[in-house]
Structures are given as C-alpha cells and as structure tokens.
Length: 330
Image (cartoon, rainbow, N blue to C red; front, side, top):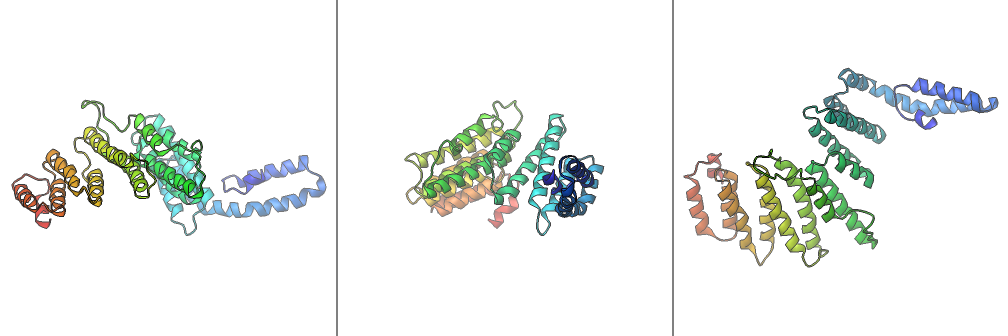
C-alpha cells in the first residue's frame, strides 16, 4: 500500500484513507501518528505529479480513451524536459491494452495504432534496458509489424556483441538472429501466397529484411561470420527483394533493398560489376519508375560502363516515366 501511495494515480485520498484504516487495525496505537506522517510525505510527490496530469487524464476520459487521445497524451509526456519513466511506461501499457481490445473488436486501424504504440514503447525504453519478456510480448502482440521485428533483431545483435566482448556467450539465454528472422517469416504476414490474396505492405517487409541483412553485413565486416556469412547475406537480401515484388505490385518505391545490395557489391573490390544486376532487373520490372532507371544509369557510370549508361539514358528519354522531369536533374 505504501508503494501505491508513491505512484501517481487519481484516488490518492482513498488510498491514503485505506492505509490509515490498515494502520489503525494492525499497528500499535503509539506508532499511528508517525506512520501517517511518513505516509503523507511519501504520497506528496506522487500526488503533485498526478495534479500536473489531471487535465490530460480528463481529456483522455472525455475522448472515450481513444487511441488518438493516448497518442496525444504520450507525445505531451515525452516532450517534457524530464520525462517520467514510470508514468510513460504506465501510459504505454494502458494504451496497448486499449489498442488490443479495439483490435480484437475489429475496429478499423486499431492494428496499425497498436503497432505504432509498440514501436514508441520500445524506442522509449531502449535507453533503460529492455527485458526479453518485453520483446516476447511485442512480437506476439504485433507479429505483422516489420519495425517491431527489426528492432528485436537489432536488440539481439547488441546482446550478442556484448556477450562476445565479455566472453560470455549463452545460446540458451536469447533467441539468435536467424531464429528470430525465421520466426517472423513463419507468421506468413510478410508474404503473399497467390496474386488473388491481399497485397502486403512493403514498408513492413523492408525494415525486417534490412535488419537481418545489416546484422549479417556487420558480422562479415567484423570477421564474426562463419564461412557462409557472405552467401547468407546476399541470399537474405535477394529473397527479400523477391518477397517485396511478390507482395505488392508497386513494390518499394524507394528500392531500399536494391540499394543495400548494390552498395554492398560496390564495396567489394573484386565484384563491382555485380552491383549492376540488381538495378538492371529492377529497371526492367518497373519500367515506368524514374527512380529505378536513374539508379541503373548511376551504377553503370560508377562501374565504368559509360557507353551503356549513355545509351540507357537516351532510351529513358523516350519512355513514359512517372516523373520525367527528374531525368534532366540526374
């Protein structure tokens, strides 16, 4: 009960009265006054903290505890000069509970807002350290969020690096990156089985693939990868590109996976020409995309294929591109 008195909440007076009744019933009369004085001092800070937020709590209640109202409340708390960790964690937990309830009830857009709450919660708690239990909850609650899985993979990467540096590798303690990635894909929420199935948002697939690929790339560069590390990295990205193209007819307009793979090939002294192929296939598939064609000509120039780059640029000028003006800025 004393712990509750130190937590900001609406019914501080009721909690204080309950503590007073408990003290009367179970403590010696000689201690009553000193115990109540101590309790009053303990609740003072929490009571003031709640008073500062009473208007926000009333606004939240007036809005029917809507998810937008939770987002507004959380944003205001995070803008404070010294954000209160306890209060913000409580707000995120309340918002997640409400979002889960609304998602279960089939409310439109509740799933997306649940994912955004998890992303915000994870980012906020990052500096304080995160438990395995938090990640287990997040990936179960928002299994279709590529951003949540991406953050989890980066968390596992940091843990593994720390264990390597400290010489304390414990495979049973945490899931490894490959297993986490496989588990994410096994949900089938990032893949599209047939063309008749609903399209999958590429913005959910790309962060997940980039997180796995980035971890593999850093392992290769640091000499931590096994003999198949380079092959695994390339396969992860190529499979990711295929996944995006199958999941959505429009693909990823920013071509983030293609850029990652091409830049990686360019960084390898012995296979720079391999950087051309991802953009050649991309430009062929997305024939009207100015971004794909400009990237293709750019990599041709960077790999000294100047004649082909010149010819490709001339061909581009006759194509019906989605943003033709960009050609003259390229």
